[in-house]
Structure formats: structure tokens, C-alpha cells
Length: 263
Image (cartoon, rainbow, N blue to C red):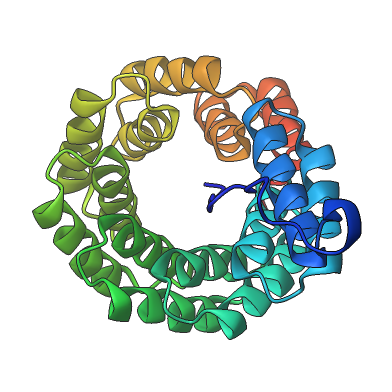
């Protein structure tokens, strides 16, 4: 989420004929960036934050907001650079550390991601969103039992947090605990019936326990909701392989690879 701060006050002028200060110009550019984000003009917003930072490079929120937009665009290494600058300026905001952790995790720098996310928790140990992100990173590192402990803490804080239940399901499925995983995916879907990731996780788990009909229904529904989900296409390919449809499986897995997923 892009952060805001106090907007420009017309009285903030100095010099002859009320000329604006450099600081005021930086604030105006920052506010323009926030407004551009609100109407979906993200590239223009990045340019506005750049203009603000050119005038005032010591603005942690401007670095944070630019990093958030780069993160949304999949420009993870650039986002990391912005968040790192932001925490150097203001190390006491947990959401900046949290977003740094997410960007590092997306860059596959998992150990560094955990350090940043733990910094965020050090500032607010009851932040369920950060706990879920720690859990997600630990799953990527195949440290499933640790992930479940963090996800259980998130669920304790927010019992109706669909992502926490879904990620716990993913961790349990990776451990081969399919029945428990299905319970967690079911909880996520009870909270949010249109949660594509939970539907896909449920479908793949059903496939693994030999329930192809229900697996296909869940995977198809998940892909309708999120047709660009690479994992979902890979799951569909595996399901078609199980059914003996080699050509269909090949096409599905090719689609998964096009979207950046699969082996």
C-alpha cells in the first residue's frame, strides 16, 4: 500500500514573491505521486516519486512508495533497493521492513527476507500479515514445520484470515498431511469462496489422494478465477497426465512454463 503524509500548505513559501522552497516542491511531487496511484497511473506515479526524491532524497515514504509500485510490477531487485534506502532513513516503521522482506523473498533471497520480516515483527509482533509472509518464505525454503508455527500464530490473531489458512494447507500438503491440508483449504474457502490459490491447492491435494473428479472441478474453478496462475496450469497438466491425456498435459505444462512456473 502506498503511504501518504501531510499535504502541501500554501503558506509554505519563502523568498521574493512567495517562491516555493525545494522542500515544498518535493512535497508537491510526493502528493502528485499519491494521487496518480489512486487513479491507476503507476508509471507516472513512479516518475512523480522520482521527482520528489531528486529534491529530497531523505524521504523514507517516497522511497517506500516507489518500492511498492516496483514490487507490484515484478521489478523485485529495484524494489529491494528502494526499501533498503527507506529503512536506512526510517528503521522504525514495520511496514517498510515487511515490504523489504516480501521483495527479498520474491527475489529468492530467502535468508535476507527472514531477517527483514523478523525486524518488522520486532516492531509489531502481532502483525498477522507479516507472520503470514514469514510462513510463505519458510514454505519456499521447505521449512514446513516452522512455517506452520508462524501461520498458527497468525490464525490465533486473525481466525478469519484466508491466506493464513491457505498457506497452512500448502505447508501440510508438502509434508504429505493431505487430510489436514484439505481442512485448511476448506477453511480458507469458507472465508473466501473465490480464493483461486485455495481452490488450486485443494485440487492438487485431491489429485494426490486419488480423487480426480473433485480435483478437476477445483482446479478448473481456480483457473477460471486466476487464468494466469502458473501453478494451476501445472496442476492441470499433472491431472491430465494421470488421465492418460498426454497431449492435453503437454499443452497445460507449456502454458505453466510460459507463465513462469513448472520445472
